[in-house]
Figure 1 (cartoon, rainbow, N blue to C red):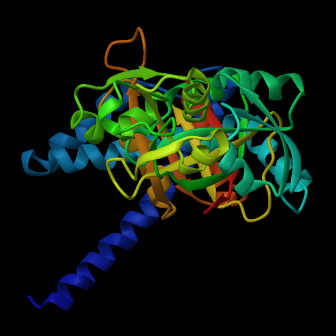
Figure 2: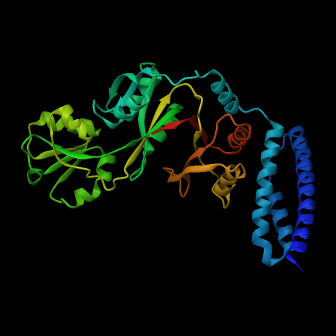
Figure 3: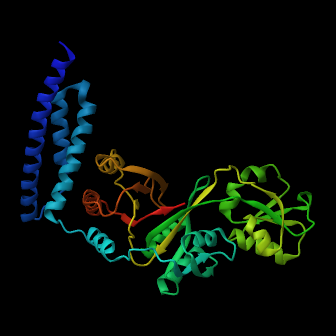
Length: 380
C-alpha cells in the first residue's frame, strides 16, 4: 500500500478520534454536573484504574505503555474540565486581570527601594539598571528587604534569584512564598568578581578571603588554586569590601565587584576570578501588590505535584499544549518530607493570554501548593 493511501486511513481514523474525543468531553461535563449536585469529588482514582486495566487489555501488550500515557492525559483533561465546570471562578486569574488593568502604563523611574547589603552591592547595581532615580535603603539580610516592603518603608525590593553558575537562591523563593509578594520586573546582570585588599598588599600575603556565599561558590577554581586562604562568609560582597577597608588588616581580601575598589579605597589584586566569563545573576524587583506592566512576557511559578508517576509530566504538558517555552524548570527537596520536591517554573508567556489564564486557574484548583510569583518583563 502506498504511503498516501496509508495517510488517508490515518486521516479517517483521526476524524473518528476527534469526534469521539468531543463526545467523551461532553459526557465528562455531564458527569461534572452530577458530581456537583451530589457533592462528589472530581478525582476518582479507582475509576481511573478500572479504565486503564480495560483499555490495556483491549490494545494488547505491545501498546499498553502508549495507552497508559494517552488515557492519563485524557483523565487530566477531563478532571480539569470538570473542575472548571463545577467552579469556574478563580481568585488568581481575577487578580491577574485586575493587575493588568490597573497597573500604570510605565514602569516607575523613581522609587524608594530596599536592597540587601551596602553601597556597591550587586543588588544596588541591579537597582540602578531598573530605576533612573532610586532612594535606596540597605538591609543586612534578604528578610529585611521583605520586611521593609511589607511595612511600607519601601515601594520595591531588589533581590538575587538565580545565578548562571551557582543556581537558584532558594532563600529568596521561600521568602516570596512566606510574604506572598510578586515579581514585577527582573534584570540580568553580568557579574565579574575581583579580589580586593588594602594598598600595597600582595596575593602572597593574603590568608583570609571574605565574601558572600554565592560569590565564594562562583570563584571556587580560584580558591581551590590557593588552598592556603581561609574562606569566611559574609552577608554581602560589598559589605566584605567595606570590612576589609575598615579592618586595617594586610592578610585579608574581599571578593567583590571592581567598583567596590574605588568606593572603599582598595586595590585590585586580581580580577575576573569567577569560574566562568559567562557569569550572570538574575535580580528580581518585588512588590507587595501584584503589578503587571505592559510588555510583561515572563511568568514565574512555584508549585508541588502529587507524589505519583506522571504528575510532573501532567503539569508540563499543559504548557506544551500551548507551545509555551520553559525558561526554567528546577526542583529542590522539601524539608521534612521524603522524596517530595518543590518545583520552580519560568515560562515565556503573556500573563493576560486567555488560554494561559485558563491553565493557571486549573492548576490553582488541582494542586495543593501553587504560587503565582508574578508576570513581568526581564531587561538586560
